[in-house]
Length: 175
Image 1 (cartoon, one colour):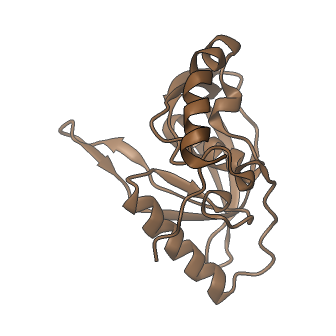
Image 2: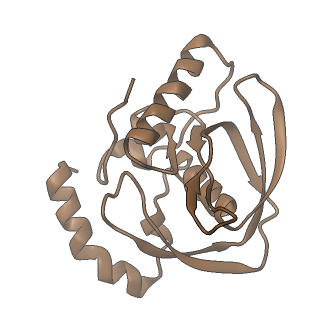
């Protein structure tokens, strides 16, 4: 079932999500609904708070370029109770978008590499060293679990540039 998204200005987007204590049938259904929601909005990730669930869960999919140069999106994955560690000193600045802040892409500087530890829906713990897009994606979605939006990571000049657009979004979505 496609879930309604929370948009800029909604208090859920500024709340800290709670760990998932047990992977129940309800959590499995939530994960499936989050995937359906992400796909319906053509997203590459969505986190619990974005769909009104203050739980430490997000879904993602890889964005890539195939051998003949075609753009593709990978299969959706579920990330539960993520922990990010060991960010690289090397950074990269890219424009990021967000389903909860529609139409607004902001330049954000993030580490190029990060270590991710998380649970799968089976309960199994996974350790991954992520680089480039997958690292950025995990950091972006994990920020949502801590009440942080990509706009919060924008430089002061970039933040000043987007302020009028943020006011318009707040008015549009009632935040």
